[in-house]
Image (cartoon, rainbow, N blue to C red; front, top):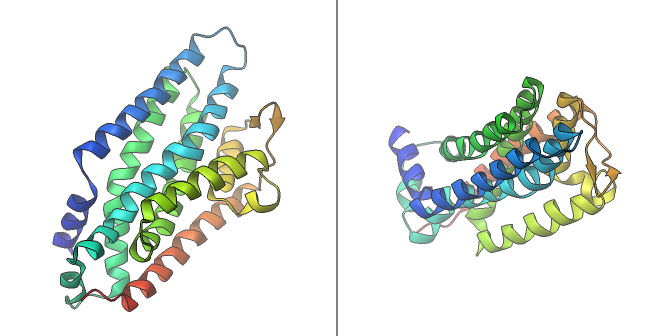
Length: 241
């Protein structure tokens, strides 16, 4: 299992991807610092709006998409998944290894810049705690969703980017907390961020409707579990020869 973990890690991680996302994280930190030196009174509220609109809506899901669709998807496309298939290892264990390898990359890439952004903005430890929990749970949910997606969908990265931009970033911003936006992962991650930070998030001057804290946590954990089960089933039926 350790060798399989290393293979998936090497498959997903490239220098270009790391540099691109580090640059994106640096941009978030620059904006966070600009909030600190601004003359606005509600600086911490502005910081949480930045995290909601930029980090949880785009930065976190795009990072999860890129690395999770590669963990099993790249192995399936280049034909090397057959060697994993022939090992006497339960499919759900392979899926868990893929998720672990992806989280090894995505958690530092997302939490690191956001922690630095909290510090640069001069926010409280409560903000640190809120962004840590909401980002970690969002990471797990997105990765569980996109791993199976990359295994079965052709051009999964392009299709996934369309989903993130149209659904998670656009629809969930326009009608967040209502109708179709209520089934977006971002909505529940934002709800956790708002409850733990005791900050009312707003978009374009309008308050964002939030789900309750524990139902939000339960939904994201459920997405992880369903994603593992669904991906395990897909992997067991995958034609890799």
